[in-house]
Amino acid sequence: MPKVIYTFYQDNLVGSMLGFLRRRKLRELRESLNEELLMHIGDTPESVYGFLEGLIDRYRPDFIVHTGDLVDNVKLERRSDLSPLYLSGLRRLAKILKNSRARLFIVPGNEDDPKLLREFFGDSVVEPGTVVEIGGRRFALGHTWKEVRGLKVDFRLYGHNFKEIPNGLNAVLGVNFVFLPSGRVVRVGYPVGTDTMRGYKLWRGL
Image 1 (cartoon, one colour):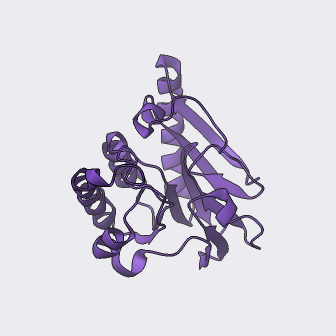
Image 2 (image 1 turned 90 degrees about the vertical axis):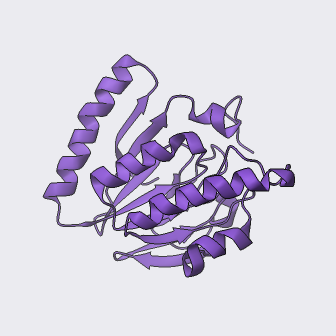
Image 3 (image 1 turned 60 degrees about the vertical axis):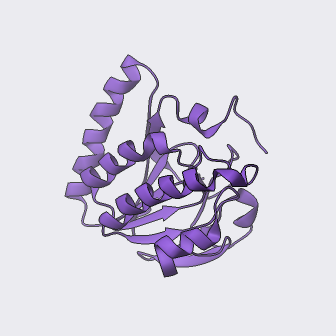
């Protein structure tokens, strides 16, 4: 597993206070290290868009990877009639990501509309299982862990459920920041209630 040097969650008052202190530490690392920064997100319901925008504004990542299910509160795979709601959320998130001026990599998830993703993100959309070199490190990009397992890379980025794999960073568990080329990893927990908005009633390994 990549070494996660800081992890914090905002599930109670103490967690929020620790989160504040560690976000400050993350900012100090960003300012003191002469390295590029990759931000990995995934399975994002609309309720976290403001939170993500705040992280982007604060830490200014050079690269952003989204490993699918961009509007995760809208389940297109089961409810295609919800496409207008999906489009509305996608438009909002696309504006946030494009305004970051980071280089984007977007992997379609099972709840996404690949055609709409390409309309909003163009060549930034990559197929699951794609391997890219970023900042001197090799990354496998997928929506599920099965799409990146076995690939010879430094990091396997994915989401979809709570499964953890060797050299894997799972965006369901938190927002992953990777400093490059050192490979230092910082994980920031999502706000409380995120899993509920994703439609998860309990932790699972599908």
